[in-house]
Image 1 (spheres, rainbow, N blue to C red):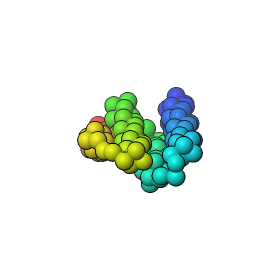
Image 2 (cartoon, rainbow, N blue to C red):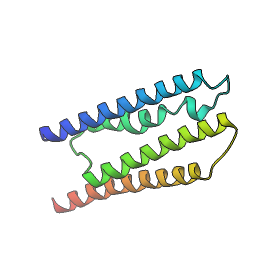
Image 3 (tube, rainbow, N blue to C red):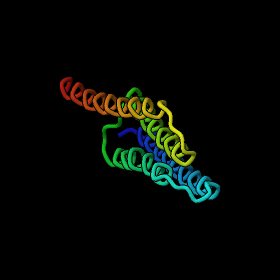
Image 4 (tube, rainbow, N blue to C red):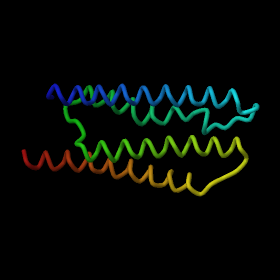
Length: 131
């Protein structure tokens, strides 16, 4: 593995750790001013970037083949959409309202994750065929 690949994976790992910490702090601040009304989507919003960001980046540090730029962009956008969707759903539940946008964000985020995973697998198969 090239040094730049490892640096990129390490940088993505630290960014996802930062986003995870931000989501946890956001929940703590929002929870403080929510007048005792809680939402599991707000409480566990930090878990999305942790499970879908920190863990995969840690795995990519241990393996040789890094995802290409397209795959990274698709995956990162999907994680961002799911995280924002969870935060919005938590805010809307606490406020006692709803929105169709969070459903669209969830569907789009899941679709981007699936397309990103398929792109990663397809790039690996294409690389094996050329060898």
